[in-house]
Amino acid sequence: MTQMPTPVAGNIDACVNATNTIQTIGAADATTDDYIFLALIAFAKIGTILSFYNGNGTATVNTNYDACTIAGARAMGGQITDADAREIGTGITLALAGLQAVAGKINLGAGSLTQMQNICTTLNSPPFNVNLCGITNPASFTALEVKAIRSLVKENTVLGLGLTQANGSISCPGDVTNCFCP
Image (cartoon, rainbow, N blue to C red; front, side):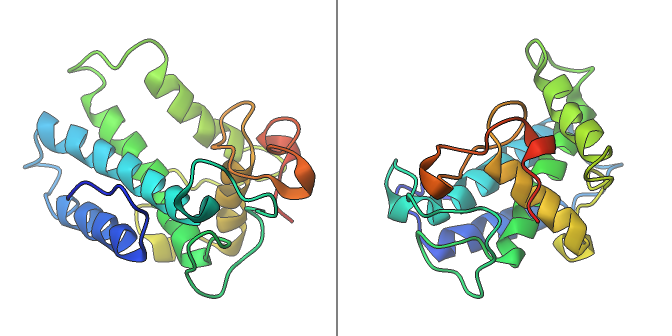
């Protein structure tokens, strides 16, 4: 992967290709370095997607941005497509898988893995009741799971990514359980 200072759609595709490539290494052959690399690529994919849809490549979120609104096609600074929301979902699940695989081998820092695992616990409870954290294929997410992923993008107070500024607010008030995308 190359440095990606300007958000363009091709960068999203590069991150998707990178995660797909690293996933071809079987669990029996994967090293600690492979799992760390997987987690880093997964985080890069999430960041690249959010950067593309966030404020036309600026550091400011568009005032009319709503993570719950589904776009039909990729447009920088527009709403997230379902395909890219699914890629955010696999970014979360692959990052978690990579971190879990190395948890006993390296020091991840206090609470890093726990915070990631809390995402799974929260989403597996009402109002979501989805278990998306084992899914590594974007096509495998259900419509409800995609809504849960969009809700994570929307919320910023507990475990979400906080990329919503609809109706003049910086993000959804309250935690992700109060920010469920309809």
